[in-house]
Length: 142
Image (cartoon, rainbow, N blue to C red; front, side, top):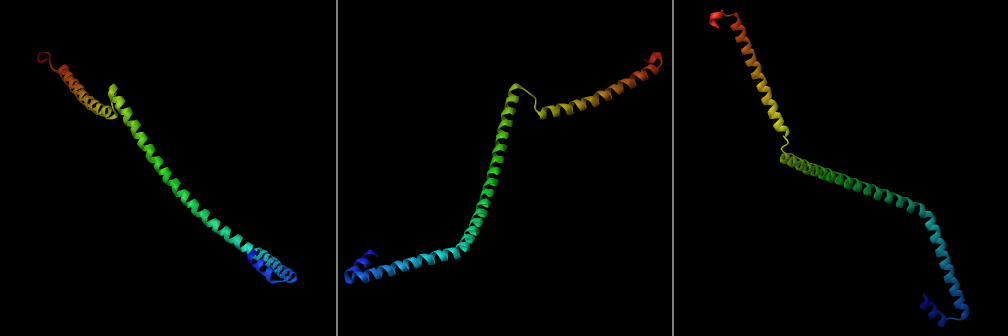
């Protein structure tokens, strides 16, 4: 624009140059007013469009964040389970080292004890029957 004014200044008189500058200034002023008016009219539309775009971005961001949170929670559960398994294995090794019986050992012993109890009850009943029979038998047959 400065080059244009220099070119005009060389080819015009001072009055013509002043008139041209006033005309350009008037056009710049009118363009500014037009921009202001358009911005005022379109501002609400643009603002509304920006809000809608912001809502869409926020919704997408929330979905992505929720998915990442669920993924992280799943990884945390897996890590916790692996940690629990490591602890259980370590405790079991320590118990074996010290000779502490396992649940399986105790269950096996409980079943054997129950079977022995049944057998002793049966033997006790048999002995009682034999004693009763011996008391009833004549003295010579004892």
